[in-house]
Amino acid sequence: MKVDPKPGSKLEEKGQKATEYRLKEPKTAKGRRTVYIPAVVVDALKAYKARQKEEMMQTGARQPDGLAFCCHFTGAPMSLNAMSGSFRQIAKDAGLNVTLHGLRHSHISSLLMAGVPLKHVSERAGHASVSVTADIYGHLLETMDRATAEVADGPLREALDRAGDTRFDTQRKRRKSAVGKTAIRNIADFRVNKDKFG
Image (cartoon, rainbow, N blue to C red; front, side, top):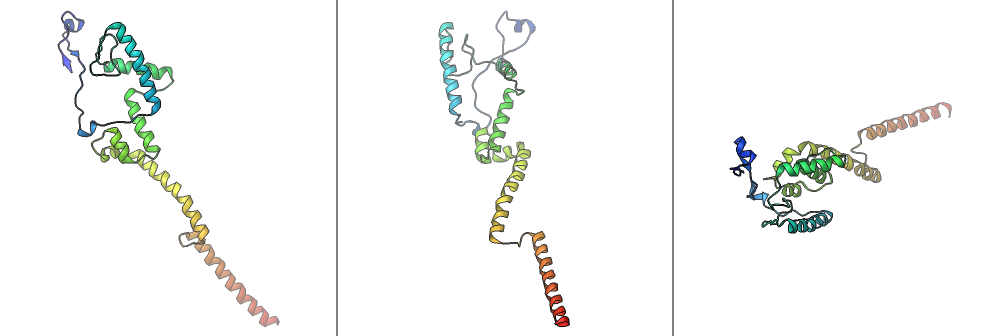
C-alpha cells in the first residue's frame, strides 16, 4: 500500500508516496489454503531460513510475521521489485527466460500435462472455481484431450483385433465383403467349368 514517505527522504523531495507491504486477506475465500510443496523445496527453504536467521541476528532485524522472504537488515517484507529483480538475475544465470509470475503458469501447466485432475490443480492454484482454470488453460486442455484420444485408440484397436471384431473397421469390413464375393464367383466358375469339361 502507498504511505507517506519518511521525512527528508528522496521520495518526499519528489512528492512521491512510499510503498509499504503488509499482510492482507486473499481476494477470494479459496485463496486462503494449504499448499503442499515438494520435499526438495522444503529442504531449500530450511537452509535459507537458517542462513537468514544468522544474518538477522547480526543486523538485529526482527520479522514478527515469520516471513521467509524479507529484508535481512530491517525485517520488513521484501519489495516486489527487489524480489523480481533477484529472480530475473537467477533465471538469467541459469539460462532461463521466465518471470517470477511465469513460474506459476509453468507449474500449473506441468501439473495438467502430467495428468493431475483439473479440480486438484484449480484448488492448488486458488482459483475461485474450476471454470476459471479451464478458461485460462483451455488451449492446453484441448491439446491434452487430443493426446488422450490417440492414447486410447491403440488399446481399443488391439482389443478389437484379439476379439476378431471388425464391426467398427469400415475398411476391413469392405475388404471382407469383397473377398467373400470373389470366393462365391470362383466357386460358381468352378462348377460351370466342371459341368462343361466333366
